[in-house]
Length: 372
Image (cartoon, rainbow, N blue to C red; front, top):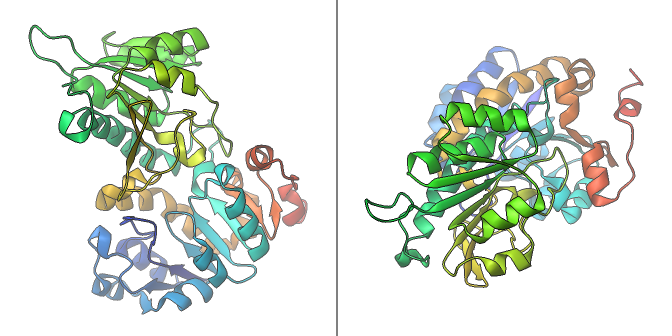
């Protein structure tokens, strides 16, 4: 199989879909890897590192149009979609629930879209989403704490406080991978932490591992309202496979927050769990609503690309090797987790979450796999 690795073009997105080590592993298995010139520079991988690994450096058009499978990090833009050819496999983060235009463009392109974020193991875990969720969760608390500084537009608060002064309060909505990593940093900074979830076992786990030094709260409207209104920093950390997250923080609640408070919604790429959030970029990351700072960067791990690229490749390479060896149809047929990643198949929406969120017809994936 020929595999293409194009350069990422999203604002300040410095990650790359494959490391040179990944390219070498695929070459040793008999596959051809073509890498767009300069694709790995942002992550610290020069072109000659890919050449030494056996990959072939190509121009943009060939990286997109020639391969059987294109692997990248973020969703393609309209110009990139125009370079895809019918029947290709696109293996990347897609987050289609918040992107009706993107979904329609990819349907018209007649490609197979395998989304990292909906690949799900039988135990309910999301193996490819997890490493970027770990990075994003830690960054969310770190960035949010920085934005509370007066010189960054915040209320001028040190979240850990000092002797004789109250600590700041950080509310984390969701106790999954993003949430637990946001809690780790918030707790380490010395903040008072409220963490919400509907899974009481998950809350009990967090209570135990942090020695009871945080408030584990059942996620309901009344509890969320009390916590958010009094919080200095709110981190949105909700994820539902392929679907838009529930709206947990309406605009009326944002109005009740103190001026100079901060909201970082990691769920923004799926539509967000805060009514007033919208996607922003690393170049222009924040805006204010009701004097509350909003941070909505949809590719947060792109700010730490070397760490993120290594972590991502650790999880994508085994799946890529499987698809390259068996072909995408057979690989998806054999691997239920990989099948969960199938969002689009030659014009059809095949993931229930995407279909529900965008109110589109759902096609049974089995109909594209010979009914097996």
